[in-house]
Length: 395
Image (cartoon, rainbow, N blue to C red; front, top):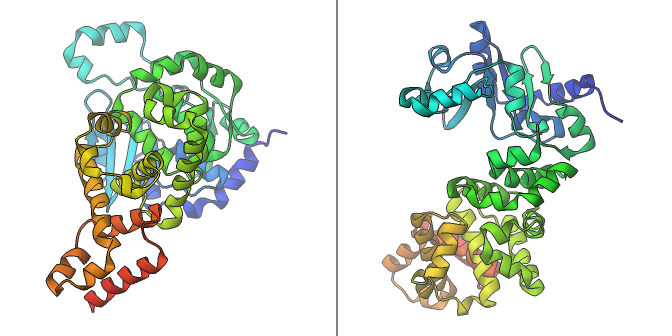
């Protein structure tokens, strides 16, 4: 049975307390100037399925320059696709003007005009903006001030039946932006929705398109995948759909070995239990990368990080398949090396105060300790020992 819009309006009203007051303040600023303003996309979807959103995107009919004038502490970003970012403390709220599809004539004109190309923004209506979005469940608009819920693409129906459905022809939309393959799989895992049949077929038939996706955008998706509560199941889905074969061949080979796949997934499941800070990309990548190394080498003492730092194949895997930045990788390698300093407590206790303090104050201390717990090189007694040493030093 398809639930009606009033049902979902009641659901989202009850979730109003989960909406950031600063986002509501921005909406009010725009509305007070007689512009449309709505929360849009993932935040609305998450509110409707009972997930507290982390980010709040805003859509409006105000042009970027008008938004900048009306919303304090905001600035325009982008040359081709102009957006406005409004800064509130350490948070950024993204404000986008309604867009529409460009006509063939407009695209042709922009192709030959560098000035127009730099200003390539085709502004439209709320309806046109709805149909530009990727999935139906992401094309929902909500105004918490007037308590208005707008759905032009039947996203509420797909929330009811728990489906991820592409807006428009799935094959064409994937060709336009191959990263939509990763987004569809990730959303299905996050929401526990199934991927609609035609979309799943298009993903299967056009998986080669994913090789065209630029590395920074793939990296962004990997980070979001690794943050999923059921990340190990999401990785299996990526393997089953042949995503790894196309863009992370190192893991495709690993997952072909059932024993290694189970071991890797076991380590991955421990990331949240151990308490890695998954909001920190270095810690997140470190936990995932060390899980892989522990699986490949089967024992932490067999891992020679100095050798790996010179191994072109390993470096290519980190940088070109996972998208780990060079500075991040250096920090991860140093943290793995630092585990040795934490393994030998007796040696530590024989050191003088200055050398002890240098260990306790190392920028790699916390991450190395967590990695040691992940690998089993240290146990909870070791953890308590090091926490007591840290505490004693601060007294």
